[in-house]
Image 1 (cartoon, chains in turn green, blue):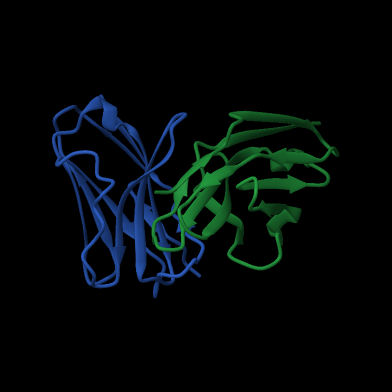
Image 2: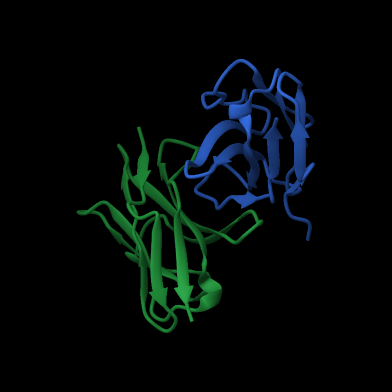
Length: 113
Length: 114
């Protein structure tokens, strides 16, 4: 079985400050991990993924995520937030033996000017 | 290039009516997924198609829900005898293959059951 948790419904950060959106996961095998972003009235867009290799993954729009196997976490980060980063962020996990990603409930990121 | 296309973008129907939602995936993508997004509930997996293989229907919430994929391309999700709890955004996604590829999502169909 595979599952993913996003413990925060909402994250508030001031523009220019660093941001972190948390994600923890549970899989029986090796995880494939993803972050997607959903802007208002739009479909989800891929940000980045971890398959194997370097624990720090860099993605679109300056975002990065760190895979931590011991803590089963894959937190999304950005050094300096922009107001335009305000959106709904989804973490997803796939067990290596599954073809179907399981998504978290989503975290609403609000960046204040 | 064209992305994943879903139609209609909005659908309002009366309780008890049947509805059909359409998804046109990216050309060449063999994998197609349907998810449902309800407020505060995240994305709920419904059904997965891969090439000509039998679909994985494990996420369909009841036998009122069905889906087909014709010619390995366009997919239709049908909900029979709609109920108010079926109101949600229905998202379709496609990807290249079975591997850990990213999903490309359509903009969704907002279904409202009155």
